[in-house]
Amino acid sequence: MATEQSLSNARLLLKTLTQKIPPALQDVDKQVFISTGIIRNLSIEEKTLLKYLMDAILLKMRKCDASDIELGGDGAKNSIWLRIHGRKKPIGDFGTYLADEFNILIQSVLMDKQREVLVQERSIDFSHTVNIGINGDIKKTRYRATAYFELGELALNMRAIGDKIRPYASYGFSSNVTKMVSLMQTKEGLILVTGITGSGKSTTLDAIVELNNRSIEAHIIIIASPVEYVHLSDKCIVRHREVGLDTRSFKNGTIEALRQDPDIIIIGEMRDPDTIVAALEVADSGHKVFSTLHTSSAIESIDRIIGEIPPIEQDRVRNRLADILRCVISQKLVPGNDGKLTLAKEVMIMTPSIRAAIKNKNLSEIYQMINEGEKMGMITMEQDLKRLYFERKISLETAKNFANNKRRFEQILNMAL
Image 1: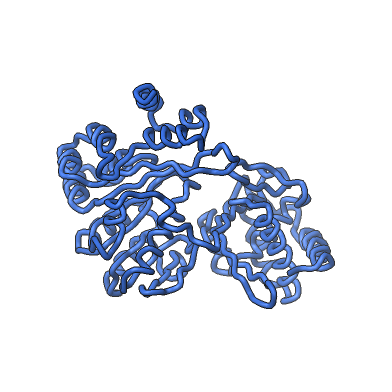
Image 2: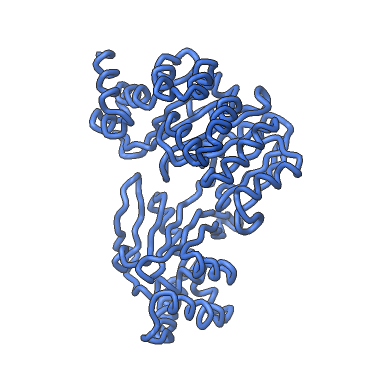
């Protein structure tokens, strides 16, 4: 790892490099100059120094038990911010940096092509790996990263990817949910894991991948932007394809997967109509498909998928979705009484009644079906928050704040008291 002298030299190098930026350059023109006039011309020794500095920052982030790091841009106020147990704040121990020092440091972790995309698109998602030497062995720590423009300056978010997968058994899913997510028991269909950014969707998908990887001989293809946890093939051969690096888009990667003899296809996110349609078609062809959505409930997930499709195609997509959807897991990470984050989840398992409600455009009826589906392994977000409160894992105030429907939560709570 970097020595104090090398870190001091890296900070000095950053200050020296900022002086090469012409004062007249602003915004995109300045970032282009940093890319082509500074980063591209760095010597191996200078690149190594900047890598030392970024590696040291990320190592310190890990030691603080932070999930995310933020740096650069006007909003960061020259500081480095960490999210620790759900709360984001500036950390004084990291020191302060000038905006152009952050601009250079951020661009230094990108490849030439990535810097071009950043300038053209004003944002880029990528993965980042840091190698740490421990007792003579090399340990790789991975990060999901996004670099983007803010008022002409560059900002960066990196999320730490855990080096261990949360065991599937720890989620407490019912046997019916396990039946739906396990290739050994169900060979086809669409399973969705939904939630807002930072709700642990990728972690849940990784747990499901490992459940299958350790239990059945098969082929799993993961299409992600970027690839986060890298699974080691066990009983399954596991392929990782990163959007922008290994395939052009989620849609392309999904279609290409059909020619690669897959059993399970993981689509990192159904973020546009083309990807949604491709995912539905692949699932309809008899494959097992997992994907994510940025929604907070099962009903909202169904509504979002249909709403993304042009009106003329919605009835066809609605019927196809009703036929292929098997399970929706919606989750939130809520502050626990122990100061850490606790998982709250909603689970919908497809039944003939729910399938009919989707086809007949009666989505409002589904909540009550989930509410009454405990024996099948279903649970609403409000019911799970009540469980967490009764188990004294979260406070009553937290349960109310994170409920999708506060009135329904109060009704459920009153019935239980």
